[in-house]
Image 1 (cartoon, rainbow, N blue to C red):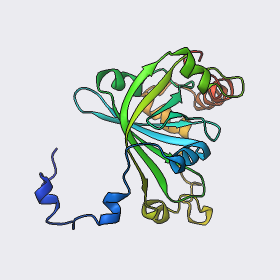
Image 2: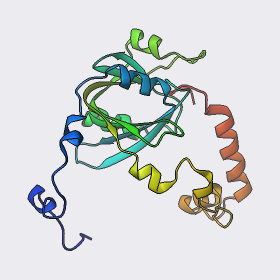
Image 3: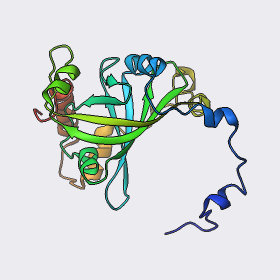
Image 4: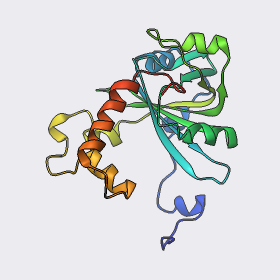
Length: 214
């Protein structure tokens, strides 16, 4: 159900928040400069937000060796599609509504790099060749035409202690992922050990497979 006391306009928002500072506005650029290329080249992990034609939003992680996302030029980058669960949530969204937002992370660095643009699902041989990595040649890549780029401040990651093991939560009393999945499947007859074994097998076999093979 909708929340009460909603702030429903930009004017409403500005009754609570001050205007952004000049540096906050000025840091946004429209292309991938050398700093951005270097950042992406060191990043092994990116979060991608997309939405379908009805505006329902999804965020999906992508990971690989540092630099697995390839910068093609100052205005384009390509994300190789590795093995997933074949739900294709992000790619289905992109063919319906191509706007995407990317958040690149580098372990140990609290600042992140935000890239917004328009995405295309491509099988262009030249792009796929560029995305090949250590013997893995993707069948599909997500190409992004870059529109906005900026460094995102460190506050959220510092508050979370994401890279600091001493700040991590205690997981000893947390149900295993296999237990959570079994409950979500709503199949009480499933054996928990079988779910754990299947998970382990899938990760072992498919983590380093390209999308479409698994």
